[in-house]
Length: 361
Image (cartoon, rainbow, N blue to C red; front, side, top):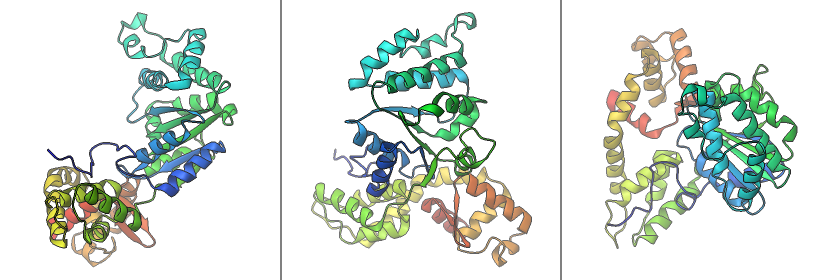
């Protein structure tokens, strides 16, 4: 069975989806200069792939420590994830981490077991997190460390966690490179721009860009060529539909590729059928997502999908009030479904936009 050259399930290895090289170059320079940086962007928009590319680029000069805070729920959860991140360090950093951990009476890689013990036998979760950051700081004195925190917005799920993290690291930003990423725009903005937040003004904010026309052309042509097919002119049509959305670009390219036999040439008709296939595959999920939204949010999406003002005739004819439209717009932007484009609003997911258009005419 032939494997697709366009995988699109889960975070992708940089070898499968080349990250935006300009973004990666910029992040590597920022981390090398020890400039704390936060990458913002919608879900499935290539942030994790870019961070993995950064980690690979830095492996010869620093020890990358990868921490994922998606849906963080408790101090024990924080301690377990930090433990996995530190224990996962390999290569030249592993021995230093192990020696320092022993001195701090920390056993690496076992926190998941420790916190399953009866309550009286469990370690104190907050003190454990303190010790784990002490370990990172001590190790950074021996060799450069880069702490990459994916889905940093999840830290709001544990009261006081961001404050502890800043307190532990604030005097060591020159020893530990810090790189954050998050998929909830409003929360990420709040964490770094709200004066009440511990990380206020502590990081440069960088937007993850969509794939350029040239990048899509290169990815599509290479994938078809490597599998004995000719992409023809479909790359431009794929980019026109997906607008460079990384996940949707790979998904649509895969749907087109599956229709073309080895030795064949892709055509516009294949793209049209590919879009239909992607919509069919995602229809149930789109319907659940749309149904979970308020009426005001649904009406804003319907207006945005057709390029109409959320205060325009279409919205009025559907019973949308200005106040409800404003509130719904803010909510959808905060959740990463909409983005402002000058005076217009764009639905970030092109498949959701097309589903709304086809469903509501």
